[in-house]
Length: 387
Image (cartoon, rainbow, N blue to C red; front, side):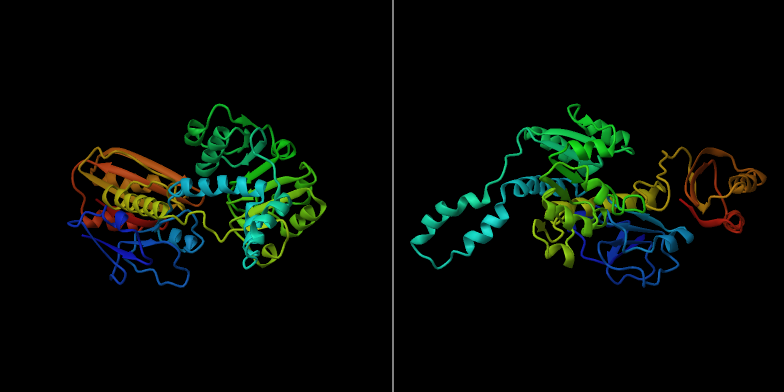
């Protein structure tokens, strides 16, 4: 029976996908085979020797010690796209409130409390302070066309916007889901210079940190509106403040406010609500559970963060699963051990990502523990399992 430790509250609809005769799950379970986590910080956690996998019910994995896990052959999964619709809906809302100044108007209207019969007259008299443009026919630039970006692009088209997208790393799956009416921007600078609205859906890494900065603001139309529901570090706050002061940026809506941003005029700070829906939490939990089951029961990797995705239908009675450092000649040593013991390989798949590799080897017949010990003795081997 597989043991699953829960470090956070996990949606019951996800946990229900664990067959009761194969799995047990609890917050304080001993010697877990896998961990289910949402936001709990695992960096100071002692990872038990029994641990094979960690599934994060969400996209970000900053709370998980990835390198430590990789060095031990512990596979880490996340759930990209499970909360995509929830984030998309918030971005569409942001397009509207960035234009129509609704949030400012609400705050002002509530400030009239206690003025009695004057309220209707004051509302009519001063409502022009909150005039804003419609989004119909305006140009939207979508930076990043992953799970969320493609949904935003498609729905913005349905609202009558002229949509262009930029993503040099777009996946085949994302491309299939994108409407043919979304125009492909030839460069990031072209998209930025042509757009009335810009929405960010890029990952945060060394290449993208501060990507929206003084140089990019200089290319933008006067009065552009920017939505950031990806990561806060994509925009340089100091340069944003100057762009708002000059009128280049009419409004900046972000789901990642900080102390500096909430003090700026022209910024609508939203308290990281992108994935805060019951549907999103259920989707993430179900996806995380399915990933753990696929790995624990069949050894396949789907949406792994630290190893390459690796999926192969089982073609023989036994399957060997191996994680190793991505160094030449390791595979040769493994296959030699099997060949010396007259074990036939029915099928095999090897995938690598950076410093680490993962192997699925289907064999005819059985395999004893001495052979597994020989494979484990190879210096570069991190993990070996047989199912």
